[in-house]
Image (cartoon, rainbow, N blue to C red; front, side, top):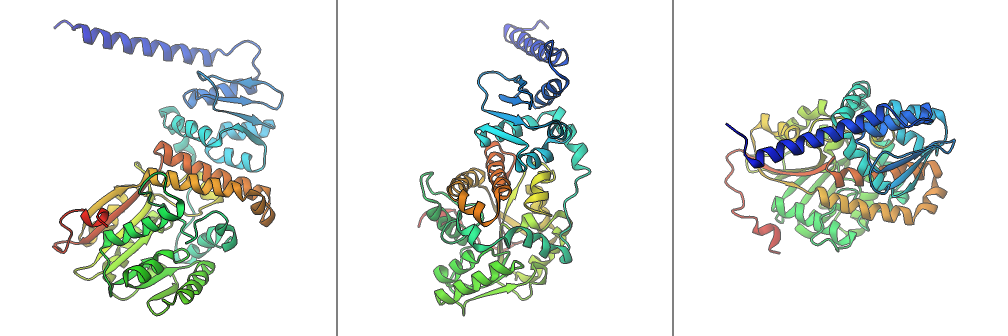
Length: 427
C-alpha cells in the first residue's frame, strides 16, 4: 500500500523534528569554543530540562542560554559549590541555594519555576529524579512523630499566618465562584461548597480530622446547625479555635480536640477531612480508612479534600525537608484505596487545581506585601524560604504537577443521595 499525501507529510514532519532534536543534541555535546567547564555543565543541565527560556549567569560573568525567544528569568549563581550542587540534584539544592542567597533570580520567580517543572517532565530528567528520590524518603508520620511534623509547620505563630491568610484563617484551597472574587469571598464559598456536598442539616453530627484554626468547624455549626468534633494536634491552632468558638457563642456545638485523628471515637452523620490527608502518609492510609469506617453509620457520608497528583511520586524533596516534613500528595487511585476496603461508594470527584493556583496567587501577593514584617518576626532566610515555597506551589498547580481532589463518598447501597447537583449551585 502506498502512503497517501497526508501520511507523507506526517513522515516528513516527524523526520524534520527528529533532525532538529539531533542538531540540538550535537550542539550541546560540542559547545562553542571557549566555553568553560562550568558553562558546559550549565548547558547540559539546561538541555536535560528541554532548553527552557532561562539564562544562567556564573560568578565569573559567563552567561549561558540555550532556549529560544526571550528569557523569562536569569539565574545568577554565586560560586562553584552552588553550581555543582545544582547540577547534582537541582530539585533539592535549588531551594537550599536560593535560601542562602548563593542563587539569585532576576525576573519572574513563578515563571522560572513553571518552565523548570515542565522541563522536569522530560524522560531524561525523570530518570535523574528517580535516582535521588529513591534516597530521599519522607519522614515518618507514626503517632510518635506526627506531632513534631505538624509543629514544624503549623506552630510558627498565629500572627505570621494572620499576615497573609484570609480573615477566617483558612489555609486550604479556596473556591472562586468567579475569578474576580476576593480571597475572603472564595474561602467562605469553599466552606459552603463542602457543606452543600455533604448536605448538612441542623442537628447533624460531624467529625473533622485536621481542623486548622477551626474555621470550617465553626462554619458548620454557626451556618448549618451541625454539632462538630474537630481533631488537630497543633497546640496553637486548637487554642485559637477554642477562643473563637467562645467568642462566637457556639462553644456548646463545637468541641475542639487536641488529639490525633487515629484516636477518633464515636459515630457521626458525616466525616470531613480538608487539607489533612497530605500529612497522613501512604503507610498510614489503612489506619485512616479504618477510622472512617468505624465512625460512619449505614447512612453516613464523608468528604476527603487533598492536594494530589496524577502519578505516584514523592513530594518535592526541598519542600518535604524545609516546609512539610512527612508530607505526601496522593494520587486519586491512592485516595480511593482508602475507601475501597470498607465498601464505600464514591458519589463525586472534583478537581479544583486552578482554584488552588488562584488561592496561591492571593497568598503570595499578601505575603510579599507583608515581607518586611515577616523579616522582622524571623529573618531574611525565612522570607526567602516561604517565598520559594509559595511561588513553587503556585507554579506546580499552574503546570498540573499538583492537583486538588475533593472526593465525596457514602456507604455502599445508600439511596439517600442527591438526584442532581442542583443543591450545589442553586442557592
